[in-house]
Length: 138
Image 1 (cartoon, rainbow, N blue to C red):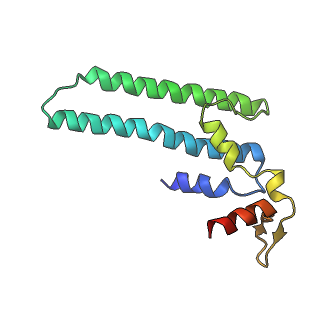
Image 2 (image 1 turned 60 degrees about the horizontal axis):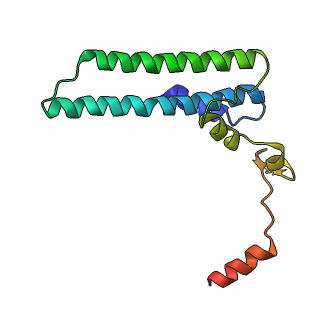
């Protein structure tokens, strides 16, 4: 639990290497992605036992093995990619979500620092078309 918040806070620190921050964010998303299938299986087992159905114990073991194998392959891919200095950006859904959350040069361009040294990004300029559409809504 504490590691989740620590990774989340540290991944927003621009003084840390981008590849390290990228991997931190990817670890957070992988944690979330692997939590929900486990939750569904746990709830399914609870519901089936409440309904009087018996699920063979081998089913849970197979599911755990598949989840562990998926995690092991994903971590191996990320470790090898990072070791080679390349972003591990080929994990379906997760890599794109991490890329969308990572700050890039377009976000940083034109920003300023406030009195406490925090970065304030430049707000995108509104186009006249946006202003006209806002007036049409009124």
